[in-house]
Structures are given as C-alpha cells and as structure tokens.
Image (cartoon, rainbow, N blue to C red; front, side, top):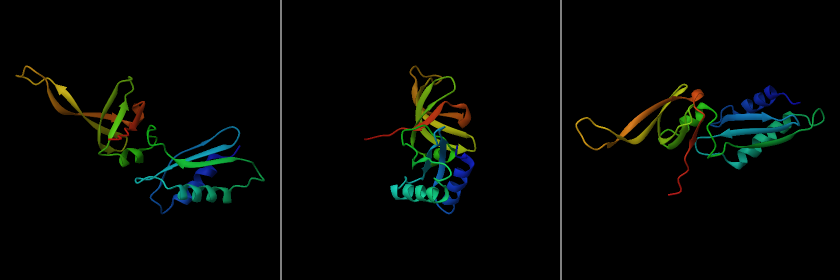
Amino acid sequence: MIDKKIVKTLVDEWLTGKDYFLVGIEISQDDKIVVEIDHAEGVWIEDCVELSRYIEDHLSRDEEDYELEVGSAGLGQPFKVPQQYINFIGKEVEVMDSEGKKIKGILTNVDGNDFTVTVREKVKVEGKKRPELQDVVHEYQMDKVKYTKYIIDFK
C-alpha cells in the first residue's frame, strides 16, 4: 500500500509558494489515492492536472500500481481544515453542534480552533411584550461540532 506520508510530502512540495492548501488525502486498501485541495478563490482544473502530474512523476507505477484523483473540496461539503473556516468568514454557514442542533448564520470570526456564528433570532427583551429580532453570537469549537458547511445561495 502506498504510504500516505509520501503523498503528503509530494503535495506539500507542490503547494510551496502557492495560495492553495491541502484539505485531505485518502488512500484506500486498493491504492486509490484521493487528494483534495482548496483555494480562497476556487480551484482551477489546470492546477489539479498540474498537481496530479507532479505526484505521478514522483511515484513509480512499477513499484506499486495506483489510481490517482486530484480535485477540489466540494463547495457544499463539511469543512475539514481551519483554512476553510477562514475563507468563509462573512458568509452564511450551517453548523450542527455535538447535540445535533442545527443553526444557520454568518460566520463572523475564527481564532485557532474557535469560531463564532452570528444568527438573527427572536429574543425576549425585558419590559417588552413581544420578542425582538436581534443578532445573537454562538461560539463553537471546530473539533466539537459534527459539521460546518457553506450554504450555497442561488439568489
């Protein structure tokens, strides 16, 4: 089986000096290698081809046969790395917390493993009969939520 560390080293070499970042590498038992990269402004197919060729040039099919797939992290897929959170600050996201509760709001801040989402909610205000819409900040930790993903808006 192809060593994931070797593939990661190759990807890291290719990424050096580029604005792309690694989202994930998966290698199945039958040596299917899947590499996901991302970029703040989207991923170009030409760059996926270039990375694929770079990896192929440095791995030997004579030593071990493999299948290689290089692509971008899916736009509607859950975030996997902190850089994805940073790229979507100011955008609408959906978060499912560890208890299974979903919220939709604007990703407003990312600090290390912590992030905040601002949600427009009805809040009971003292001295008022009816609740009022207010911005409520929800704080989360990346490793404590089930998922966070960008909400695609076609409006």
